Length: 478
Image 1 (cartoon, rainbow, N blue to C red):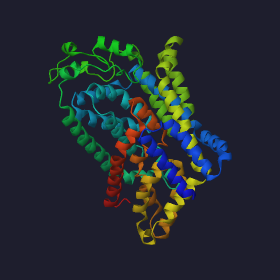
Image 2: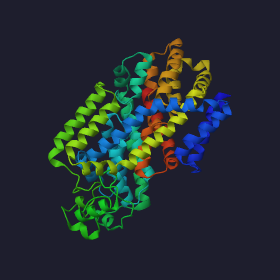
Image 3: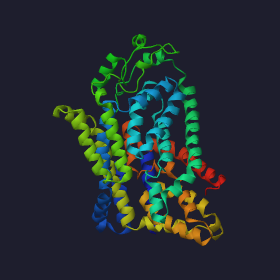
Image 4: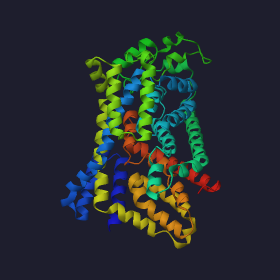
């Protein structure tokens, strides 16, 4: 019964948000509360919620201060060189912009944190998508899949969890999987190319002059670039950059491109915004490297590292208190939206775990594996990783289900390492799970409905995961 109710609760949640009958926050809170009553454990709802909030509180704190820290880094121009290189490649071609989104998300994902990847990617690419009236779910979908592939890095989380749960070395899991993961990343880029061609056919190819001549929409602002208001767009117009800037008359400024336009006139981030701190560039770069190193080496808990990093970044870059308040206020919407969504998700995970639904669901799935599939437990684990990491947290899957799968595999002569490698192939789909806090950073900053993102990305993310699994089997890794 708990198995059926667990699947029914998840299905009800997904259907309601995809049909836009409820907001994600309301659905994350009300649906599990209702099912908790159905299970007959309504009296324990408070305990389940508190347990869920307690388990996700460090994540919420990390996201809050990570948004402030990387928001400030975007404001002061730390990532502008990378962004400029990607935008120079993209120009005003929808196909190049979608491919550039995949490349930028993959590069920034090297830090191992999905939230920061989405913040930087959306901040850079959102103005281009809005200016050219491109589909924003294409941006969120491609970014989520690229980050999902890169999320398998040893410091990204899933690989470390698999290594811990099965008591093997993370390097032994990840390094042999590099060829399969490279094929997966190539599949994301190819998919971005195909989706970009579809956008190009729908919108046509523009020169920079034509793109700049388009009337900018009122809500097209410098996402994460320090404005958050129309005033940022106005200042961008004066400088010939920014999300809300530029007209056909501005196209004369700056070096001409092959299309007759100007790269300077078509920047995702305003190159002359008041928050830039070019003299502090190397300080900010070293601070970020030190922060990421400390994260990888686990010198301190990640929430503490981001708290200290945010305080240092604000103090050094904006020594005047009114400026610090302005930076915090500029990113307050993202902080509130994401932290609120995380605590709402805590209700969902708390009820799933507390009522025992998640354990019954996992055991049912494992028990349904036919005996004849025993010698192919690597394939089975890879296939199960798709739905299980989507409907469960990584902790639940890697610490709860994976050891059972590994034990079943060993009984049929399948090595623990093969099971561990197969367990990470579902990450491209996992990164769009409603239980992943970072996805709310992505859809929130991109102003995309979570249901729309889900409807678009699931089929492509499943395809990407299957490509990785197929490559792993073909190369003899799994």
